[in-house]
Image (cartoon, rainbow, N blue to C red):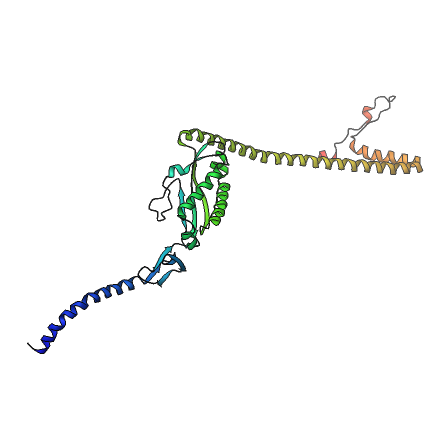
Length: 326
């Protein structure tokens, strides 16, 4: 046996003893490299925990951390609008807190006039402070659901069923939104509540037909009132216009008669003044002016003396007026 082969057989037990530690070391290095980096999605922020204690927040992208579980990262979707549904559920939802466990109980409520109503609504929110959302409140998603349901029941309990179903929906949404914002700030949930929207609001199924009849009657009443108001708005302005026109015509006629009377009185006063100065001359002028105004309107007149006999042969036949001959 050569010296090389002898040395090789002597070193073989040593190589076998080093192989296992090398394999373990390689696995250790691979695991360390694999657990030393992480990636945060575009719509999220990463909350870094070191031995379970909050350290920092990191933005979206590739980051590094201490391996082997020293650092742990929780991705929180802070840039995504999330919603909670009450009384119903959308299939294939991604938010685990979006749909409640008992939708039928959630939507069953009692109104202020002691009527029952089935109220469905949604709450849209966004996580703004992930460290508060994760660590200040236990089960923040369920807590937000409880807040929304409690506030909605309180608001619905202060209103009649007609307000909830018809005219008071917008006011209810605004009231619930403001109260939820106050409670979320007080509990430091770390969320921004953007919208509360009522969906289907109906009475219970046993009284649904009767309630629909009441709604139809109210709608017919509103339509009748609107039609009457329309006719009123057409007839009243027209009557007012005609009355105003009549009043203006009467005012014009009044001013005309007053002016004519004042003119006649002024003319009579002027004639009287001249008559006082020269009665004979004024009397003769008035007589002649009157004859000048009256005679052109009279036809041919014959004045016969009662003592004259056989006057007819002496009279010429009257010739027709010039206008009639034309």
